[in-house]
Length: 194
Image (cartoon, rainbow, N blue to C red):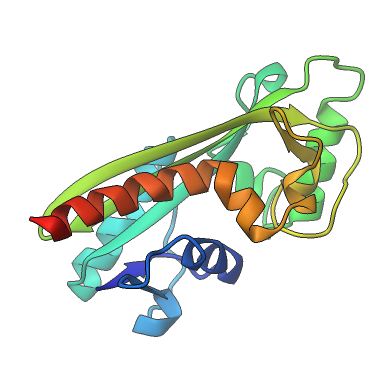
């Protein structure tokens, strides 16, 4: 089964490929010659995931799924949330985003945060949503050089490492995206069995 993952992000694609069972081949937007930047104009992660999935289904008539992920920090009232990718403005810049988060948390002891991923799957004319949450905290300084986005400043609950210090497999086992994707895979397996 071929499934289009509505992203141009090679890091996200790599992360998800590692989770997919052998019979599901993941292809991204570049593979279907979709080079447009799909505007994420919704106020929620769910809304953005739906916009991206619907765009691909409407323009390319193929089954696909899209995700949107946000870092939600308790002391910042859930920010950056839906604006995580462009928290420090355009163009998107992970380093500037992380620096802004660390600046905004200066002197704040409550460092509780969570990553939340929502996946919208468009399959055979229907839409399904899957979500995953990984709770943790924002550490004081960037640590580790793997991963992407906010990974160097996010330490999951119960871990001694940031996401950026983990292997792909370690991160996928506990991450928000890993949780949401496993729900998606379980759903696809159930359909395949019928």
